[in-house]
Length: 269
Length: 237
Image (cartoon, helix red, strand yellow):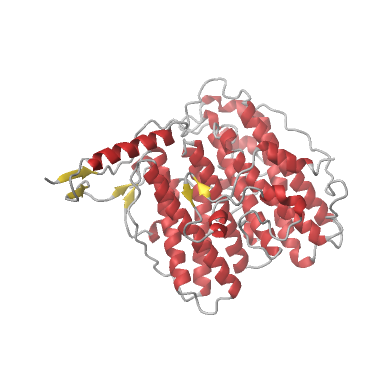
Protein backbone atom coordinates (compact mmCIF):
# COMPACT_ATOMS: atom_id res chain seq x y z
CA UNK A 1 0.00 0.00 0.00
CA UNK A 2 0.61 3.00 -0.93
CA UNK A 3 2.64 5.32 0.98
CA UNK A 4 3.98 6.79 -2.19
CA UNK A 5 0.50 7.66 -3.33
CA UNK A 6 -0.22 9.25 -0.03
CA UNK A 7 2.98 11.22 -0.12
CA UNK A 8 2.15 12.27 -3.61
CA UNK A 9 -1.18 13.54 -2.41
CA UNK A 10 0.35 15.25 0.55
CA UNK A 11 2.94 16.91 -1.58
CA UNK A 12 0.18 19.02 -3.06
CA UNK A 13 -0.94 20.02 0.36
CA UNK A 14 -0.37 23.60 1.28
CA UNK A 15 1.20 22.51 4.52
CA UNK A 16 4.23 21.18 2.78
CA UNK A 17 6.90 23.00 0.96
CA UNK A 18 8.01 21.98 -2.49
CA UNK A 19 10.86 20.10 -0.93
CA UNK A 20 8.46 17.43 0.13
CA UNK A 21 9.19 15.50 -3.02
CA UNK A 22 12.56 14.62 -1.57
CA UNK A 23 10.73 12.39 0.78
CA UNK A 24 9.72 10.19 -2.09
CA UNK A 25 12.39 7.88 -0.79
CA UNK A 26 10.32 7.14 2.27
CA UNK A 27 9.13 3.67 1.44
CA UNK A 28 8.94 1.36 4.31
CA UNK A 29 5.92 2.40 6.31
CA UNK A 30 3.66 -0.58 6.29
CA UNK A 31 0.13 0.67 6.49
CA UNK A 32 -1.55 3.97 6.10
CA UNK A 33 -5.15 3.06 5.84
CA UNK A 34 -6.56 5.64 8.17
CA UNK A 35 -6.56 9.34 8.30
CA UNK A 36 -5.02 9.20 11.73
CA UNK A 37 -2.12 7.28 10.32
CA UNK A 38 -1.58 9.79 7.60
CA UNK A 39 -1.07 12.37 10.27
CA UNK A 40 2.10 10.55 11.17
CA UNK A 41 3.64 11.05 7.77
CA UNK A 42 5.15 14.42 8.72
CA UNK A 43 7.64 12.43 10.72
CA UNK A 44 10.87 13.46 9.16
CA UNK A 45 9.07 16.06 7.14
CA UNK A 46 8.32 18.12 10.17
CA UNK A 47 11.23 20.44 9.73
CA UNK A 48 9.92 21.33 6.33
CA UNK A 49 6.35 21.98 7.28
CA UNK A 50 5.95 25.53 6.09
CA UNK A 51 3.24 26.37 8.59
CA UNK A 52 4.41 24.32 11.51
CA UNK A 53 4.76 25.75 14.96
CA UNK A 54 8.50 25.66 14.65
CA UNK A 55 8.74 26.65 11.06
CA UNK A 56 12.01 28.40 11.53
CA UNK A 57 13.78 25.43 10.01
CA UNK A 58 13.07 26.02 6.38
CA UNK A 59 16.49 25.99 4.88
CA UNK A 60 17.38 23.62 2.10
CA UNK A 61 19.54 21.68 4.53
CA UNK A 62 16.51 20.51 6.44
CA UNK A 63 17.16 16.93 5.53
CA UNK A 64 20.73 16.97 6.81
CA UNK A 65 21.16 14.58 9.70
CA UNK A 66 20.87 16.20 13.08
CA UNK A 67 22.86 13.93 15.31
CA UNK A 68 20.96 14.48 18.53
CA UNK A 69 17.68 13.83 16.77
CA UNK A 70 18.73 10.70 14.97
CA UNK A 71 20.75 9.40 17.91
CA UNK A 72 17.57 9.61 19.94
CA UNK A 73 15.71 7.66 17.28
CA UNK A 74 18.47 5.04 17.12
CA UNK A 75 18.20 4.59 20.87
CA UNK A 76 14.44 4.26 20.57
CA UNK A 77 14.91 1.72 17.79
CA UNK A 78 17.22 -0.36 19.96
CA UNK A 79 14.65 -0.44 22.73
CA UNK A 80 11.89 -1.32 20.29
CA UNK A 81 14.00 -4.09 18.74
CA UNK A 82 14.43 -5.46 22.25
CA UNK A 83 10.74 -5.33 23.10
CA UNK A 84 9.67 -6.64 19.72
CA UNK A 85 11.93 -9.68 19.85
CA UNK A 86 11.08 -10.30 23.48
CA UNK A 87 7.33 -10.49 22.96
CA UNK A 88 7.57 -12.32 19.64
CA UNK A 89 9.76 -14.95 21.28
CA UNK A 90 7.47 -15.24 24.30
CA UNK A 91 4.36 -15.61 22.19
CA UNK A 92 6.02 -18.25 20.01
CA UNK A 93 7.06 -20.29 23.04
CA UNK A 94 4.44 -22.99 23.50
CA UNK A 95 2.96 -23.15 26.94
CA UNK A 96 4.61 -20.00 28.27
CA UNK A 97 1.78 -17.48 28.18
CA UNK A 98 -1.55 -18.68 29.60
CA UNK A 99 -4.40 -18.47 27.16
CA UNK A 100 -6.15 -15.83 29.22
CA UNK A 101 -3.19 -13.48 28.83
CA UNK A 102 -2.32 -14.11 25.21
CA UNK A 103 -4.55 -11.38 23.82
CA UNK A 104 -2.77 -8.79 25.93
CA UNK A 105 0.69 -9.83 24.84
CA UNK A 106 -0.34 -10.17 21.22
CA UNK A 107 -1.61 -6.60 21.36
CA UNK A 108 1.63 -5.37 22.91
CA UNK A 109 3.72 -7.37 20.45
CA UNK A 110 1.82 -5.91 17.53
CA UNK A 111 2.62 -2.40 18.70
CA UNK A 112 6.29 -3.05 19.29
CA UNK A 113 6.66 -4.54 15.83
CA UNK A 114 4.96 -1.47 14.38
CA UNK A 115 7.28 0.81 16.36
CA UNK A 116 10.32 -0.91 14.85
CA UNK A 117 8.96 -0.39 11.35
CA UNK A 118 8.04 3.18 12.11
CA UNK A 119 11.38 4.16 13.61
CA UNK A 120 13.37 2.54 10.83
CA UNK A 121 11.34 4.50 8.31
CA UNK A 122 11.79 7.67 10.33
CA UNK A 123 15.54 7.29 10.39
CA UNK A 124 15.63 6.50 6.71
CA UNK A 125 13.55 9.57 5.97
CA UNK A 126 16.05 11.65 7.87
CA UNK A 127 18.86 10.31 5.74
CA UNK A 128 20.29 7.96 8.34
CA UNK A 129 20.67 4.21 8.08
CA UNK A 130 18.73 2.50 10.87
CA UNK A 131 20.94 0.54 13.24
CA UNK A 132 20.91 -3.23 12.89
CA UNK A 133 19.07 -5.32 15.43
CA UNK A 134 21.43 -6.41 18.20
CA UNK A 135 21.70 -10.02 19.34
CA UNK A 136 19.69 -10.21 22.51
CA UNK A 137 20.20 -12.41 25.51
CA UNK A 138 17.04 -12.15 27.56
CA UNK A 139 18.55 -14.28 30.29
CA UNK A 140 20.99 -11.42 30.93
CA UNK A 141 23.85 -13.86 31.25
CA UNK A 142 21.79 -16.57 32.89
CA UNK A 143 20.09 -14.37 35.50
CA UNK A 144 16.58 -14.62 34.08
CA UNK A 145 14.61 -17.43 32.49
CA UNK A 146 11.76 -15.47 30.93
CA UNK A 147 10.84 -18.03 28.28
CA UNK A 148 10.44 -20.92 30.66
CA UNK A 149 9.08 -19.09 33.70
CA UNK A 150 6.01 -16.96 33.06
CA UNK A 151 6.44 -14.91 36.20
CA UNK A 152 9.90 -13.93 35.01
CA UNK A 153 8.50 -13.17 31.59
CA UNK A 154 6.06 -10.76 33.24
CA UNK A 155 8.77 -9.21 35.41
CA UNK A 156 10.96 -8.41 32.43
CA UNK A 157 7.96 -7.21 30.42
CA UNK A 158 7.16 -4.74 33.19
CA UNK A 159 10.79 -3.65 33.40
CA UNK A 160 11.04 -3.11 29.64
CA UNK A 161 7.81 -1.13 29.44
CA UNK A 162 8.56 1.07 32.43
CA UNK A 163 12.06 1.63 31.02
CA UNK A 164 10.64 2.53 27.63
CA UNK A 165 8.35 5.14 29.14
CA UNK A 166 11.26 6.77 30.93
CA UNK A 167 13.62 6.55 27.97
CA UNK A 168 11.29 8.21 25.45
CA UNK A 169 10.58 10.97 27.91
CA UNK A 170 14.28 11.47 28.42
CA UNK A 171 14.78 12.06 24.70
CA UNK A 172 12.14 14.78 24.44
CA UNK A 173 14.73 17.53 24.31
CA UNK A 174 16.68 15.75 21.58
CA UNK A 175 13.73 15.38 19.24
CA UNK A 176 12.02 18.70 19.97
CA UNK A 177 13.76 20.35 17.02
CA UNK A 178 11.53 18.37 14.68
CA UNK A 179 7.81 18.77 15.48
CA UNK A 180 6.85 15.72 13.43
CA UNK A 181 9.33 13.47 15.17
CA UNK A 182 8.49 14.94 18.56
CA UNK A 183 4.81 14.23 18.14
CA UNK A 184 5.40 10.71 16.88
CA UNK A 185 7.74 10.03 19.79
CA UNK A 186 5.05 11.23 22.18
CA UNK A 187 2.53 8.99 20.42
CA UNK A 188 4.80 5.97 20.92
CA UNK A 189 5.62 7.02 24.47
CA UNK A 190 1.99 6.94 25.59
CA UNK A 191 1.53 3.50 24.03
CA UNK A 192 4.45 2.23 26.11
CA UNK A 193 2.79 3.73 29.17
CA UNK A 194 -0.48 1.97 28.39
CA UNK A 195 1.45 -1.29 28.06
CA UNK A 196 3.34 -0.66 31.28
CA UNK A 197 0.15 -0.02 33.21
CA UNK A 198 -1.43 -3.20 31.89
CA UNK A 199 1.53 -5.47 32.65
CA UNK A 200 1.91 -3.92 36.10
CA UNK A 201 -1.75 -4.53 36.84
CA UNK A 202 -1.52 -8.13 35.61
CA UNK A 203 1.21 -8.55 38.22
CA UNK A 204 -1.15 -7.23 40.93
CA UNK A 205 0.62 -3.88 41.01
CA UNK A 206 -0.88 -0.49 40.50
CA UNK A 207 -0.61 0.75 36.94
CA UNK A 208 1.48 3.68 38.15
CA UNK A 209 4.80 3.81 39.96
CA UNK A 210 4.75 4.91 43.57
CA UNK A 211 8.10 6.05 44.94
CA UNK A 212 10.87 3.88 43.49
CA UNK A 213 9.07 0.64 44.14
CA UNK A 214 8.72 -1.32 40.94
CA UNK A 215 6.27 -3.63 42.69
CA UNK A 216 7.43 -7.16 43.50
CA UNK A 217 10.45 -6.71 41.31
CA UNK A 218 13.91 -8.26 41.82
CA UNK A 219 16.75 -6.02 42.90
CA UNK A 220 18.27 -6.49 39.45
CA UNK A 221 15.63 -4.08 38.12
CA UNK A 222 16.27 -1.32 40.66
CA UNK A 223 17.86 0.87 37.99
CA UNK A 224 14.53 0.94 36.16
CA UNK A 225 12.87 2.66 39.11
CA UNK A 226 15.67 4.75 40.61
CA UNK A 227 14.56 8.36 40.75
CA UNK A 228 10.85 7.67 40.35
CA UNK A 229 10.43 8.75 43.97
CA UNK A 230 10.94 12.38 42.97
CA UNK A 231 8.28 14.71 44.37
CA UNK A 232 9.64 18.04 43.15
CA UNK A 233 8.37 19.22 39.76
CA UNK A 234 9.56 22.65 38.63
CA UNK A 235 9.78 23.68 42.25
CA UNK A 236 6.34 22.37 43.17
CA UNK A 237 6.14 19.73 45.91
CA UNK A 238 3.79 17.04 44.65
CA UNK A 239 3.69 15.29 48.04
CA UNK A 240 1.98 18.16 49.83
CA UNK A 241 -1.61 17.17 49.16
CA UNK A 242 -1.71 13.38 49.41
CA UNK A 243 1.75 12.27 50.46
CA UNK A 244 4.87 11.14 48.64
CA UNK A 245 3.45 7.94 47.12
CA UNK A 246 0.67 9.74 45.27
CA UNK A 247 2.90 12.71 44.52
CA UNK A 248 5.63 10.61 42.96
CA UNK A 249 3.13 8.51 41.02
CA UNK A 250 1.45 11.55 39.52
CA UNK A 251 4.58 12.31 37.48
CA UNK A 252 6.70 9.71 35.72
CA UNK A 253 10.41 10.44 35.60
CA UNK A 254 12.93 10.48 32.79
CA UNK A 255 16.10 8.51 32.34
CA UNK A 256 19.03 9.66 30.24
CA UNK A 257 20.11 7.96 27.08
CA UNK A 258 23.11 6.56 28.91
CA UNK A 259 20.89 5.09 31.62
CA UNK A 260 18.60 3.56 29.03
CA UNK A 261 21.55 2.05 27.20
CA UNK A 262 22.91 0.66 30.45
CA UNK A 263 19.61 -1.11 31.13
CA UNK A 264 19.24 -2.40 27.58
CA UNK A 265 22.86 -3.53 27.48
CA UNK A 266 22.16 -6.11 30.16
CA UNK A 267 20.13 -7.93 27.53
CA UNK A 268 22.44 -7.50 24.58
CA UNK A 269 24.72 -10.45 23.99
CA UNK B 1 -7.00 56.07 46.74
CA UNK B 2 -8.21 53.15 44.75
CA UNK B 3 -5.55 51.29 42.88
CA UNK B 4 -6.48 49.45 39.76
CA UNK B 5 -4.64 46.37 38.74
CA UNK B 6 -5.03 45.62 35.10
CA UNK B 7 -4.98 41.91 34.66
CA UNK B 8 -4.06 40.93 31.18
CA UNK B 9 -6.30 38.32 29.70
CA UNK B 10 -3.89 37.78 26.89
CA UNK B 11 -1.12 36.05 28.75
CA UNK B 12 2.50 36.88 28.37
CA UNK B 13 4.10 37.80 25.13
CA UNK B 14 7.60 37.71 26.48
CA UNK B 15 10.49 36.26 24.62
CA UNK B 16 9.61 32.61 24.49
CA UNK B 17 13.10 31.43 23.81
CA UNK B 18 13.26 27.98 25.34
CA UNK B 19 16.10 28.68 27.68
CA UNK B 20 15.00 32.06 28.89
CA UNK B 21 11.37 31.51 29.56
CA UNK B 22 11.57 30.36 33.13
CA UNK B 23 13.97 33.14 34.00
CA UNK B 24 11.75 35.70 32.39
CA UNK B 25 8.89 34.25 34.32
CA UNK B 26 10.81 35.09 37.44
CA UNK B 27 11.22 38.65 36.24
CA UNK B 28 7.53 38.89 35.59
CA UNK B 29 6.83 37.69 39.07
CA UNK B 30 9.15 40.29 40.55
CA UNK B 31 7.47 43.04 38.55
CA UNK B 32 4.07 41.89 39.70
CA UNK B 33 5.37 42.09 43.24
CA UNK B 34 6.49 45.66 42.72
CA UNK B 35 3.13 46.62 41.33
CA UNK B 36 1.36 45.15 44.30
CA UNK B 37 3.79 46.82 46.65
CA UNK B 38 2.52 50.10 45.24
CA UNK B 39 -0.90 49.42 46.69
CA UNK B 40 -1.35 51.19 49.98
CA UNK B 41 -3.98 48.81 51.23
CA UNK B 42 -6.49 46.26 50.07
CA UNK B 43 -8.58 48.89 48.40
CA UNK B 44 -8.02 47.73 44.87
CA UNK B 45 -9.96 45.82 42.33
CA UNK B 46 -9.34 43.75 39.30
CA UNK B 47 -10.19 45.42 36.06
CA UNK B 48 -10.81 42.93 33.35
CA UNK B 49 -11.94 43.70 29.85
CA UNK B 50 -15.62 44.36 29.24
CA UNK B 51 -16.06 40.81 28.10
CA UNK B 52 -14.90 38.63 30.98
CA UNK B 53 -14.17 35.60 28.84
CA UNK B 54 -10.66 34.45 29.68
CA UNK B 55 -8.15 33.86 26.95
CA UNK B 56 -5.66 31.12 27.73
CA UNK B 57 -2.81 33.25 26.47
CA UNK B 58 0.09 33.08 24.11
CA UNK B 59 3.09 30.84 23.78
CA UNK B 60 3.86 28.51 26.61
CA UNK B 61 1.49 30.33 28.95
CA UNK B 62 -1.34 29.36 26.66
CA UNK B 63 -0.23 25.73 26.71
CA UNK B 64 0.08 25.73 30.47
CA UNK B 65 -3.36 27.24 30.84
CA UNK B 66 -4.73 24.69 28.38
CA UNK B 67 -3.29 21.87 30.46
CA UNK B 68 -4.56 23.57 33.59
CA UNK B 69 -8.07 23.74 32.13
CA UNK B 70 -8.03 20.06 31.20
CA UNK B 71 -6.63 19.05 34.58
CA UNK B 72 -9.30 21.12 36.29
CA UNK B 73 -11.89 19.15 34.37
CA UNK B 74 -10.38 15.80 35.31
CA UNK B 75 -9.90 16.80 38.94
CA UNK B 76 -13.46 18.08 39.16
CA UNK B 77 -14.89 14.91 37.66
CA UNK B 78 -12.94 12.55 39.92
CA UNK B 79 -13.72 14.67 42.97
CA UNK B 80 -17.37 13.99 42.27
CA UNK B 81 -16.66 10.31 41.69
CA UNK B 82 -14.77 9.74 44.95
CA UNK B 83 -17.18 11.83 47.02
CA UNK B 84 -20.02 9.54 46.02
CA UNK B 85 -18.85 6.27 44.53
CA UNK B 86 -21.21 4.51 42.18
CA UNK B 87 -23.32 1.68 43.42
CA UNK B 88 -21.56 -1.63 43.86
CA UNK B 89 -18.02 -0.34 43.34
CA UNK B 90 -15.32 -2.91 44.08
CA UNK B 91 -12.40 -2.29 46.42
CA UNK B 92 -10.02 -2.34 43.48
CA UNK B 93 -12.07 0.17 41.53
CA UNK B 94 -12.24 2.39 44.60
CA UNK B 95 -8.46 2.29 44.85
CA UNK B 96 -8.02 3.09 41.18
CA UNK B 97 -10.41 6.02 41.27
CA UNK B 98 -8.94 7.36 44.49
CA UNK B 99 -5.43 7.21 43.07
CA UNK B 100 -6.49 8.87 39.83
CA UNK B 101 -8.34 11.55 41.79
CA UNK B 102 -5.16 12.22 43.76
CA UNK B 103 -3.03 12.43 40.64
CA UNK B 104 -5.38 14.76 38.78
CA UNK B 105 -5.77 17.12 41.72
CA UNK B 106 -1.98 17.22 42.00
CA UNK B 107 -1.69 17.95 38.28
CA UNK B 108 -4.26 20.72 38.59
CA UNK B 109 -2.54 22.39 41.49
CA UNK B 110 0.85 21.93 39.85
CA UNK B 111 -0.24 23.88 36.77
CA UNK B 112 -1.74 26.67 38.82
CA UNK B 113 1.56 26.97 40.67
CA UNK B 114 3.61 26.73 37.48
CA UNK B 115 1.60 29.42 35.69
CA UNK B 116 1.83 31.69 38.69
CA UNK B 117 5.56 31.04 38.96
CA UNK B 118 5.91 32.03 35.31
CA UNK B 119 4.45 35.41 36.23
CA UNK B 120 1.30 34.75 34.25
CA UNK B 121 -2.37 34.61 35.09
CA UNK B 122 -3.83 31.15 35.60
CA UNK B 123 -7.21 30.40 34.13
CA UNK B 124 -9.87 31.24 36.71
CA UNK B 125 -11.47 28.34 38.52
CA UNK B 126 -13.58 26.77 35.84
CA UNK B 127 -17.02 25.29 36.30
CA UNK B 128 -18.13 22.14 34.56
CA UNK B 129 -21.31 20.36 33.60
CA UNK B 130 -21.94 16.67 33.19
CA UNK B 131 -25.06 16.39 31.10
CA UNK B 132 -26.12 12.82 30.64
CA UNK B 133 -23.56 11.40 33.06
CA UNK B 134 -24.98 9.31 35.88
CA UNK B 135 -22.61 9.36 38.83
CA UNK B 136 -24.43 6.40 40.34
CA UNK B 137 -23.80 4.26 37.30
CA UNK B 138 -20.61 2.21 37.01
CA UNK B 139 -20.88 2.07 33.23
CA UNK B 140 -21.42 5.80 32.92
CA UNK B 141 -18.50 6.73 35.18
CA UNK B 142 -16.09 4.26 33.62
CA UNK B 143 -17.03 5.42 30.13
CA UNK B 144 -16.55 9.05 31.10
CA UNK B 145 -13.23 8.31 32.79
CA UNK B 146 -12.06 6.46 29.69
CA UNK B 147 -13.02 9.39 27.49
CA UNK B 148 -11.32 11.91 29.76
CA UNK B 149 -8.09 9.93 30.05
CA UNK B 150 -7.88 9.19 26.34
CA UNK B 151 -8.57 12.87 25.69
CA UNK B 152 -5.83 13.85 28.10
CA UNK B 153 -3.36 11.59 26.31
CA UNK B 154 -4.33 12.94 22.89
CA UNK B 155 -4.19 16.51 24.17
CA UNK B 156 -0.67 16.28 25.59
CA UNK B 157 0.52 14.28 22.60
CA UNK B 158 -0.78 17.01 20.31
CA UNK B 159 0.39 19.95 22.39
CA UNK B 160 4.02 18.93 22.74
CA UNK B 161 5.05 20.45 19.44
CA UNK B 162 3.77 23.86 20.52
CA UNK B 163 5.79 23.95 23.73
CA UNK B 164 8.88 26.13 23.45
CA UNK B 165 10.46 25.68 26.86
CA UNK B 166 12.09 22.26 27.06
CA UNK B 167 11.52 22.08 30.79
CA UNK B 168 7.78 22.35 30.22
CA UNK B 169 7.99 19.79 27.44
CA UNK B 170 9.56 17.26 29.79
CA UNK B 171 6.95 18.04 32.43
CA UNK B 172 4.22 17.41 29.88
CA UNK B 173 5.91 14.10 29.10
CA UNK B 174 5.97 13.19 32.77
CA UNK B 175 2.24 13.81 33.01
CA UNK B 176 1.04 12.31 29.75
CA UNK B 177 2.45 8.89 30.56
CA UNK B 178 0.55 8.93 33.83
CA UNK B 179 -2.62 9.81 31.94
CA UNK B 180 -1.90 6.90 29.62
CA UNK B 181 -1.44 4.58 32.60
CA UNK B 182 -4.82 5.76 33.87
CA UNK B 183 -6.45 5.24 30.49
CA UNK B 184 -5.05 1.73 30.29
CA UNK B 185 -6.31 0.81 33.76
CA UNK B 186 -9.79 2.21 33.17
CA UNK B 187 -10.02 0.46 29.82
CA UNK B 188 -8.96 -2.84 31.35
CA UNK B 189 -11.51 -2.48 34.13
CA UNK B 190 -14.19 -1.97 31.48
CA UNK B 191 -13.07 -4.97 29.43
CA UNK B 192 -10.66 -7.10 31.47
CA UNK B 193 -8.06 -9.27 29.79
CA UNK B 194 -8.74 -7.82 26.36
CA UNK B 195 -6.55 -5.73 24.12
CA UNK B 196 -8.56 -2.63 25.00
CA UNK B 197 -5.94 -1.21 27.38
CA UNK B 198 -4.24 -0.04 24.20
CA UNK B 199 -7.06 -0.79 21.84
CA UNK B 200 -7.16 -0.51 18.10
CA UNK B 201 -9.61 2.37 18.55
CA UNK B 202 -6.77 4.55 19.86
CA UNK B 203 -3.57 2.91 18.59
CA UNK B 204 -3.15 3.01 14.84
CA UNK B 205 -1.66 0.31 12.64
CA UNK B 206 1.61 2.24 12.87
CA UNK B 207 1.65 1.72 16.64
CA UNK B 208 1.00 5.38 17.42
CA UNK B 209 -1.45 6.69 20.00
CA UNK B 210 -3.84 9.53 19.27
CA UNK B 211 -2.58 13.12 19.10
CA UNK B 212 -5.01 15.97 18.69
CA UNK B 213 -4.49 19.66 18.29
CA UNK B 214 -5.99 21.96 20.90
CA UNK B 215 -8.93 23.11 18.82
CA UNK B 216 -10.00 19.51 18.30
CA UNK B 217 -9.64 18.71 21.99
CA UNK B 218 -11.65 21.75 23.02
CA UNK B 219 -14.30 20.84 20.46
CA UNK B 220 -14.43 17.29 21.82
CA UNK B 221 -14.43 18.21 25.51
CA UNK B 222 -16.34 21.45 25.10
CA UNK B 223 -19.59 20.00 26.39
CA UNK B 224 -18.03 19.70 29.85
CA UNK B 225 -17.01 23.34 30.11
CA UNK B 226 -19.59 25.61 31.70
CA UNK B 227 -17.15 28.50 32.03
CA UNK B 228 -16.33 29.83 28.58
CA UNK B 229 -12.80 30.65 27.54
CA UNK B 230 -10.97 31.50 24.37
CA UNK B 231 -7.55 30.64 23.04
CA UNK B 232 -7.23 32.94 20.10
CA UNK B 233 -3.67 31.87 19.34
CA UNK B 234 -5.01 28.36 18.62
CA UNK B 235 -8.09 29.59 16.81
CA UNK B 236 -10.43 28.79 19.69
CA UNK B 237 -13.17 31.31 20.38
